[in-house]
Image 1 (tube, one colour):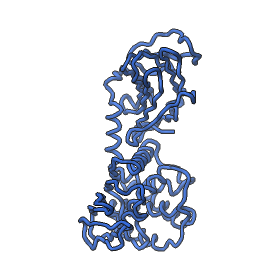
Image 2 (cartoon, helix red, strand yellow):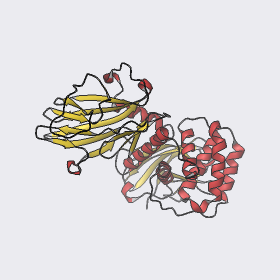
Image 3 (cartoon, helix red, strand yellow):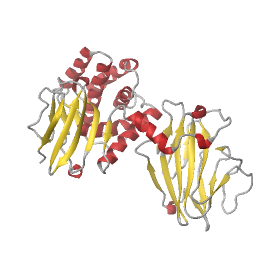
Image 4 (cartoon, one colour):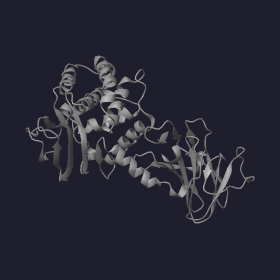
Length: 391
């Protein structure tokens, strides 16, 4: 299930793995069907073999349905116009005309839709059909609120434009750059997790205190005022560290580094030191294994593979080493949470079997070492380059 919406909005929509759209404002679910020259195709039919993806990990969902000679592509995203809209676009990527049937007749359309029976398929009362010519697109919209005034759907931002806007928003926290799988896939998952936090908010602290803690930290990293979060985050951190055995250590480490960043941003150096001291006293934690894929878990798992703050307040770059599937792939990570609220970035370029690393931090006082090459440290400097010997 993928959530689409606007940042901080009251409502959002869920898009399931067949492109079915459910709004949190209580309006009916929207399903879709396509008629080509031969027959009707229903997204709910497993035989159709739908393929779904998101654009760069952002809340822009693309679902492809195979029809005669090509695909019909459904794209779903949200815009803030008119109080918030879910835009649903259909593209006919096939050589012949098709018709798209929708199970809600109250969608906003760019032109009047004939109120007539739809032959060849049984659909709920009020369903509509939209003709879609060869290599053309059509849009409809679902409003979050009651603003359904005059609207030019073609003037709304495109899926690509919205995706780029989301990337700019989520990369405020940290910018993770890679063009090749599997690293690029992991980085896209972080974008998706941050988008989820911006669309849906943080989990309930009563049921998921560590998830709420990391989620609140992420909102500050994404630009929210740290002062409105400190009073909530600090007690959560105390609770999670006091019950360290209940939580995976990599998530606690992410929370500690993130909270130091929040406190440093709020101008609280003493509190930063207190967090570091509390972290140094944590002797045990729960298993590093996990099965769920909540936003907090995804963000913590990826960022902790890039930089981890140890109990002695040392930041370790690539603390898990370089996985075999990462070797030979160039990547960059900027704006990671390091010791004492410092932000750290580094880039890896491969020279044969070894890694040329360019690195920087916002303070030379943060101690950094390598989880790849035990001979390297930042030696009290705020940036530089090195060649790491990779075993």
